[in-house]
Length: 144
Image (cartoon, rainbow, N blue to C red):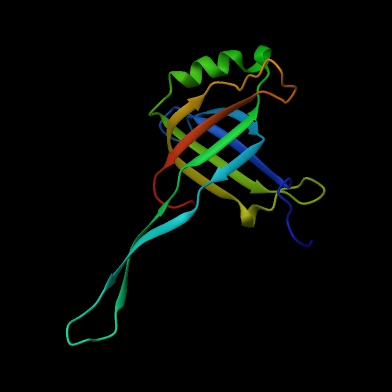
């Protein structure tokens, strides 16, 4: 199969309902950023000039930002609804795709948390780029 390119992913956002089974699917998004697994570390130097030890804290997952091109006719109502969902359950399922667009289930990751923010679609009176809507999730625990 070779290396997976950035374009070979599907990211679907689910919001509300308290669980993925009850959440509303908002469809496929274009971009995914964040979700890094990190931990806090501390260096501790024992007495007697002993070698320093590195203490590692619990792992945590960074915020996830997903975005997609904004179509005012199709996405306008979704944007208004999302504004009312700050703090609600959310899950972003990121699935790698083969060149034939079939999913690679073994590589799938589910990032679960809450909606932290919804960014208004971009606007520039002199621009011609696609206007984007962005949703930021605060993640609980590690991806599954």
